[in-house]
Image (cartoon, rainbow, N blue to C red; front, side, top):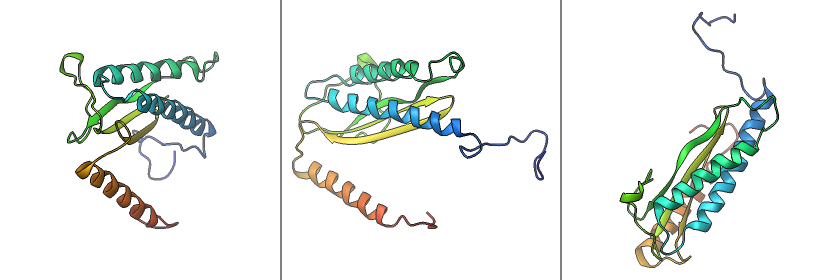
Length: 164
């Protein structure tokens, strides 16, 4: 036992200690990225939000069964790390409605997509914002541009050795 560790303490291993951890993160990220692309393609005028969320969640489950599918890794836990959420316009986040509470997307809706997949507890989440129909007008366009400018400003502050 290492110094400073009690009997009940857990030692967390990193991907440096266990290279297989990085492989699990990468595999989960590949599935999450593919699911995000699918969600973006499904977000069209007239699409039902609940149907999109269910379809993408099913896609994540199917794709995860294809990864690490040899005999040794069949017992790995895998699944949805963050349920697919399609938040529209003024809804800030985490909107994954039941079928009877769902609404349909319209052109010029600002859509925030969030989802995640995990393999053996190592999660990869992703998010993206789109405008249904590809063009935003007036206030919606200003909001999207402001978010993009804020993202660029934040990325310029990231430096080696920097703190949050």
